[in-house]
Figure 1 (cartoon, helix red, strand yellow):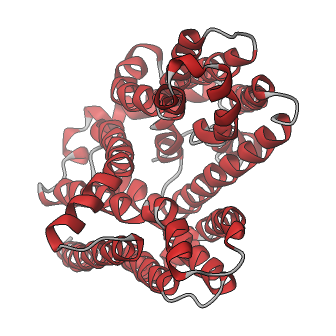
Figure 2 (cartoon, one colour):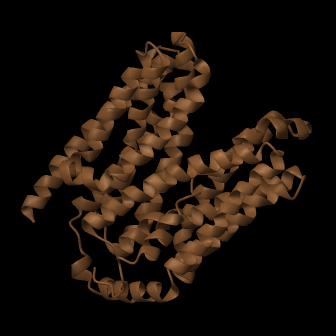
Figure 3 (spheres, helix red, strand yellow):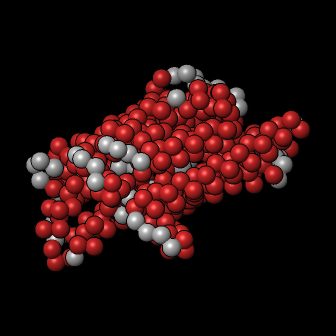
Length: 401
């Protein structure tokens, strides 16, 4: 795609990458739960804890609706609307004590994140291609992880004041809004839209073989299975520590934080990794996950456990691969839809993971956190095998073309 804009302009790249910073930071205020349960004791513990999951509901709904907003407002205005909603919904609990209004504000935060979620990847695909696109997709995933860690850290510091203050962490939306507005200008979007209109008119240029979108769809389905398999890292790993009776179990939170940071750094090198492994990149990711899970259930101490957690977090490179595969494979007219679909399947997999793991364990007649980790390992084996088949098919298609 040839667009008459300066693709190497630092502010353009920074502005687009910046919008990923708080995309997954809805749970950054999880530390407020004990204080809020005490203040809102009449609402019930489950309802208070649900404040952490309400944004996910809003996000899934508005990821699906985002294409409608983009159609009428354009991506720039849709992203800015989403960021402003995130700012309003995120910070509102600082100013109020009404529990039901706080519930609504958390949904608004999810709405905002959903509106710009797809654009975190699609804007990169609109402007860049090839190695540059893959490199930026790696940075995007890394910034998303770093942003989540930063938000948790800042919210933790603010929590020292009171639970209301912790919600001021979402003031971080303000510099993000400024960077995006200055970096991705309306004139830039107008040029991109003009170029895309020319591409859409050329039906032959956009026509793909029917197999290629199918391959992209299978990759998206595998991301759903992957999320089912990888969530036990957070939900069951701490219970594994107890089952193994390891010393210094209180180090788990630090292990998880370190693992997230290592995963972010590793993902930042996705572009270079892809150059070597090509379509076998997700297979490599699954191998890392299997090794990491094996290390967790055989850890003799917290050091080995932490290293294993870091290895598991490196599987995050599957995200830029899937988003890149979607943008590379499907027609440009369908790109936003398929990216939205990928986001929905990712969130759905994460949400359903405890249930699918429990169901699988019940079918197999096993129980306990170590058994769940082993099930997750076999899920990753399945995903790896499917990606091997997809890689072979992609290579055959490439040779035909």
